Length: 490
Image 1: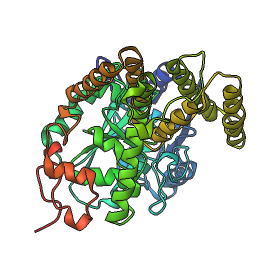
Image 2: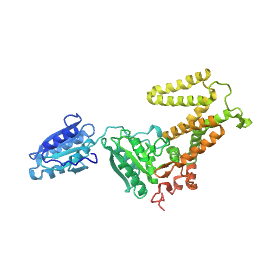
Image 3: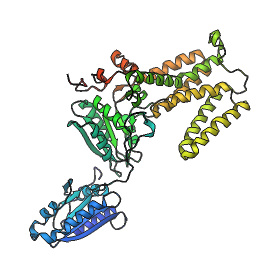
């Protein structure tokens, strides 16, 4: 129902209700919308349902209970109360206007109307089609839980509450989309999350005006943080309930969107995107080592190619012991052009792998890596060093836990390499400076993007560098302004 649409009360005459629903949502025209008519205590009852979104077994059981009223009851005047008592389900509510009834019906609930009554009943017998929780492909761990979020918001809230059985955990639901009426859930812990942050998130979501959320949580993100053409992710996505639960306990707000298998974590900084659940499934020493290796890969994905281009263009910057770095043979194609071609080639392969059936994608990758790469070197299109350094930078991108961050780093890498190719040393220095200033200026829901590096917080920055034990981490991150700073009872 749109915000400007007039409320239409339920008519006492069931024929009027049926005519309105036929006109409004196509009862009798749309094959998936149905009506079942029965009589109880000499009164007609209409049961409206949506095939595919409701559980047929529940509906059959309800019909049995309703029909059996005629065998057990005789008080016609009490038909409404008797009917309500026979609705054997834990979620039964009343409704007094047809527009609200339509919203519920199209969400998979059933609507029951009784002749002569201006209020009806809503019974939640939803059973959405979907898959079972399984480990997300993009956030796999060696050890740890194998369940993951799915496209059903009810299942997702259950997976989260299973991990946090706190009476202060809240799931507030809002419908977004003038036509889609998509369920959007805001999750937070009442005495931990900053009330100002919760209200800000709710206000931004309630102000969304759009036909529908066909792209799910991504559409919510674009309205929430107003990212524009900034490639760097301002929210974090996760498909792991344990990761979402951890952030809830730290004071973050989680946004769940029905039909989306990932949830949004807000607010987040740059450093939220470079951590992975695997680090916390190993002991602190191993977790710290894994984290440092990952950081090294991320730095390589950003700065390895620009530095190599600089040494190629100005070999005098290299120490004598490293003089072998650079192309060992002459080529007619500028190195920077080779880098762009190779980088775009890897992007082509990534896109092709997504759209290729899994059994064929492995073979396609081998053909591209072995045949195309080698032939390109043999014909003089590339020098071998270009393939080497582009491949190392690509591996660093793949080691980045956040897919969105890895693509943003690739754009920044190519921009820095181009600046170095044009201006050499000043290009690297000025380009890197502009890049850092740009990141410093980014804010996600009033949160500095490079915290705790800028503004500098020594204790928090140390926790970024070193994976501390859970027992030694007693304070929640200050960046989310938690109401309760202590993680563990004192």
